[in-house]
Each structure stands twice: as C-alpha cells, then as structure tokens.
Amino acid sequence: MFHGLRVRVLDDALEDPRSTSELLKVTDESANGAYRLRHHFRSWAGPFDLMAELRVESKALRCRVWLENEPAAKPWFKVYLQQVALGAWNEKARRVYGGVGNVLEDPQPFTMSFDGHNLASSYVGFEFPAGSIVEAVDTPPDRLSVDPSRSIYALDVPLTQTITLIPAANVWEGVKIWRDLDTRKASAGVPQLAGRFVFDIWGGRYGESAQLLKKAFQYGLTNSAVVWHNWQRWGYDYRLPDVYPPNPSTARSTNSGNWSMSASRTACSSHRTTTTSICIPTPKASATRASSSPPKANRRRHGFTTRAWRRATARGPINCVRWWSAT
Image (cartoon, rainbow, N blue to C red; front, side, top):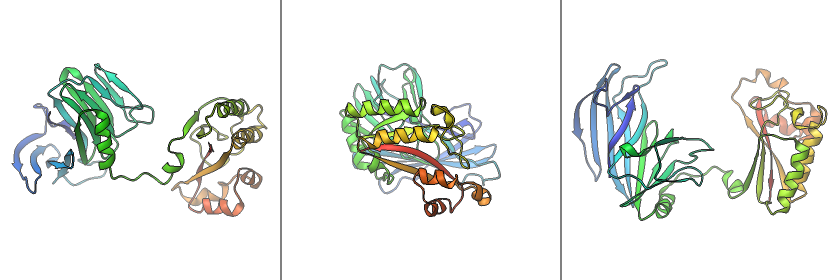
C-alpha cells in the first residue's frame, strides 16, 4: 500500500510540516461508494481546498485529485496543482518498468523525464515482493521518480488528475487490464504508422542515406517510416517562407539538394514505398502569407499543385515535414 499523496501548490509541498500553506481541517465528504476528503488550506495567496477521492472501478483503484475554492486567477498568476504524486510505499520495489523497453532491477534513486526518448508513456510498472502494481495517469506526467531509501516509486504529474492503480500478479497482466480500462482514442494517423520500424535520421546526406536505405530494405525492413529532420533550407525548426530548396548541407553541392532528396525518395519508392508531404497550418497572422509559398516549380516538384497549396495555406503560413513510409 502507499501512504497518502505528495502535492505541490504555490511552489509549496503541502505534505511537508514546514509548508507555508497551513492545513486548517479535513472534512469527510464520502458518498456513493467513493471515499472523498476535503483538505482546507490557508496560504499567502488565499484559502483553497485540496480534494482527494478514492474509488474502486472494475479491477483498479482510481485516485482523483483536484482543487476547489482557490483564489481567482490574475494576470500571470494562477493557483493550480503543480505536482501530484503517490506517497511512500510500504515495500521496496524489486523491479521498475518505465520507458521504452526499460526494466531496472534493484534500482538506485533516479528520475526519468517524460519525452519520446525516455519515459514516453503515461503508465509504469512496479514489482514488489507482495505483488505488482501498474500506475497510470490521464495526462502526460512530468517524470518518473524513484527513491528506494524513502520507498518512493511514482509518476509526478501536474494539474487535475486521476491516478489509476492496478494490482496484479505481474506487470504484464496489469498492463492488459489498463489496456481495457483506457478509453482514450488514438489519433487518426496512428493506424497508418503503428507497428512500423522508424528510421529517425538526424544527419548525413541524401545520396549516401539513399544507399543505406536500399540496403535496409533488402534486409527486410520494408514496413518502415523514414523521418528526416533538418531537411529545410535554413535548418531545423525553421518555417516558411523559403524552406525550398532542401538544406544544401545534406546534398553533394549547394545546387543539388532537390536532386539528392529525390534520390532518397526514389530509393524508398523502388521498394514499394509511398511519399507523403505533411503540412501543419500555424496560427500565425496571415500578413506574410503572400511570401510564404515556395516558387511554383518547387511546389510542383514536391507534390503540391497551385490549388492544393492555396488550400493548405488558407489559414496562414505552414510548416512542412517530408517523410517516406515503406509499405
């Protein structure tokens, strides 16, 4: 079992006896099968109520945490839940499952930040001597925190939150239960990309990479997606206008970027691939729209008709990401 919650509001850890936010009283408001407590706090910014509710649903324990009666928001100031995390467990975990295929046995203290390269999911698993627990949250967490000396094993997550705890004989069974309980829907693009091997390319040149891709396809990596970063003329994180021609540093010469990019596309298409241009409208003002499109020749070379380009830019300048997917 875990002991309470760790909550941060106004840069203050509310569970800390030294907290500048004073706990005045706790009111039991349990009803309809839910155990609900209202924690009345007084702070330098004004009073607020920390709400916590426990409810058993299906094969999981749901812990919902939110604020009520907080001070009114002001410019550049808002009282909100900066962190919600489980308190200490009564046992030390033998294994921690968190991140992409990452399992840690008898871990030392660490934190794992949430991004595509580290934590990359909103659920983790803990294997204790008495059984396993899968912890899931309904918004992206900030990090996974582990400190065996304090028996801390928890996701740190901000804002109004529902933490789901699933006890199971092992984490694999717990994850299956979470799969059935999780009602969030994947975006429309997930079925197209799910299960593909991803070539996440951050360097090199188009010509040499085209040859390497051909070799990879010959080894059977045909169900793949190729994502090429920093392809724009002016480099990574730059947007229109003038992203075309492609970044010359990835080509053999400053004038061969288009040709080299086409060579990479041909390498994919010759192995049953498709080429797609993904354009994401940005909410920028349309004052620069007239100068936001590349020359007509380049638009056509990269798959845009004049009419399609006008539709894509109808709401302002756009960012374009070039990718190829092997099918």
